[in-house]
Length: 606
Image: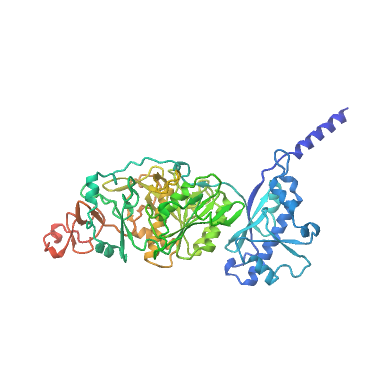
């Protein structure tokens, strides 16, 4: 009797065990052939072939483990994970002949299969045959430095085997990321300000055609030509962020100068590509005008869709309307590219705009960054990132290094938690992407100013890796109601980052050079206003660089006074003549010798 009950207990236990389910997930697997290998794209074709062969063999090994341990993919209901249905539809050649291996096709490398066949590079020394195969269980991601990344769909049990295979450098479970500010950017916000709220009388006065001096601005900035935008050009809309980046942030004689024009070089980012990795884009809005038929016609498009299942280039229909998920309204992505390069709300109005959709997973981020690196034009490309997570990954560190070394400028948002985001990689408070220090990290300011500059907006993160600050309150394209002429006010450091991306594009277009992330950081800080943000010093024991972004035009013009303001109060110089004690640029033609004498207070350094 006792033996009967013991046997029954064992049987029940075994039945329970058989239905224990594991959490199945995609994993990022890094495969390294030899530490001595150079970067993949710098190696000889012979070595690249050997790397491809080794990686393909490991992918076969991973696939074999999945097949052998498919029972470990049981779900909570006892059924097998449907992703393993692929095993039931394998090519007949593979099912009937175990010696045959798969040649895992690489959708990101169009020449991969062709090279494989032409060079006959795989396993010439054995009788193995290779069957071209496109799998959803094991797939290529991209190369990074001298190793390759693949994706594998693993159970907890198979992960233990795969992560300890020979040549596996890293093995990381896929996970969801956070799009910075996504939660707070779906609805309009009321932004209180003391700029841009003008009476009709003031506005009419503001429209005087000659109240700014284009020749003086060209001398000040070095721009070949100057374009000027009235930021109230659309009825009931004010592009609140644009005037702030093309004039001094300081008061003059106790009052804010009311200059609501945005000044920018007429090249306006032409020939430069701005990429955003985000949730999608609807490009039918008037802000995404391509200027068809003009000398500065440009591209505004969704280029590719990245998910944990791979990356695919868009169809013709998707090029103008793409989202990472059906039914999702991609406001965050629309905002990114609208502020960076929209016709009305954008900083670089002639730049090419590209969206790579991302499904908020780690794997899709690798797919997206790899795609941009392999398709972008070196020294003419800016990548805007407004997503991140909270711990260090060497794989991301290496990927950012790989993108930087291609000559692509990376700009990211600091985030909206009002905390230090610059902890070391060993710290549990490490933040991505800022903590890697391989991008230009942008914090946010509010335009509620006093006579001495701006304030960090209360939610903006800070720290010694935050390179520059920009307005965090913007007006951008809005397509949620189907109106292609609708704009909306919103806020977040996700708004600050594309402002800086746009300014980087202005610089690259107007002053061509072999820009990198590092050299662009130096250029932006050189053009910026130093110590213009008042409340950074009060953050205990944290030294945050105090730079407020500027596009190169610092002088202030006023509809009430055509004199250019100068001197210590506005931190601006005169392009000609002298800067008087009162802060006015005085022309020598007007015989102003009393005001231009140092003993009478002339500000000679300006």
